[in-house]
Image 1 (cartoon, rainbow, N blue to C red):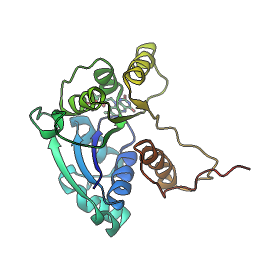
Image 2: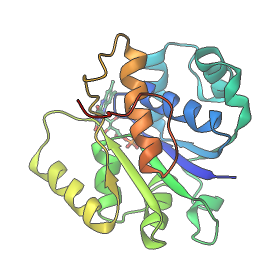
Image 3: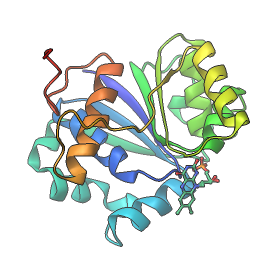
Image 4: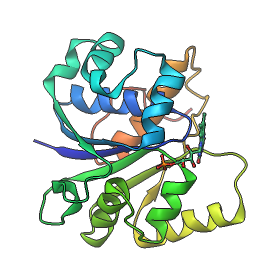
Length: 200
Ligand SMILES: Cc1cc2nc3c(=O)[nH]c(=O)nc-3n(C[C@H](O)[C@H](O)[C@H](O)COP(=O)(O)O)c2cc1C
């Protein structure tokens, strides 16, 4: 079974996080999920008062259906630096931070490990496992751009939350599905969320 770590931080774009989680669960993945404090806040700010982390399963089923029950997820506290994800001996196949705030990007780029999300990301880099960062900010400062370069040089994939329009999206969910599909591909997984471009 594929085991994926997911960090959800306080950048705008909570919908990208839930769409990605649902798609991974649909594939039967085992997810290890960590929300930052602001990640929790933006989940509610952007998806409504019902979107509480402690009711994540219900939220995902109500938005994306029963298929998500093919996978499993477990939540860890971002403060728990003794959690399994903090250790390289704990096997996960990859990690995505979606959305990834500029603050967490900076922490990952500089190996700060101030919380479980940053530590787990650092573990991915040191163990040479897949790490996908999904930043969302605009415009970007020079330090933010440099942090992206530093993280990419360290081995992370920078996958900005930049949906494309050649799929002629009709809904916000179509936009989120495009980014979630790109994330699945970046994690080395099949995606059925949008039709790949086949050439003109
Ligand atoms: C409503 C709201 C929207 C935000 N949007 C963004 C954003 O899109 N990108 C970003 O980098 N930070 C954004 N922030 C700021 C981060 O939440 C803040 O820097 C926070 O400290 C990030 O911490 P974390 O990485 O531990 O979640 C936003 C904050 C709020 C309250």
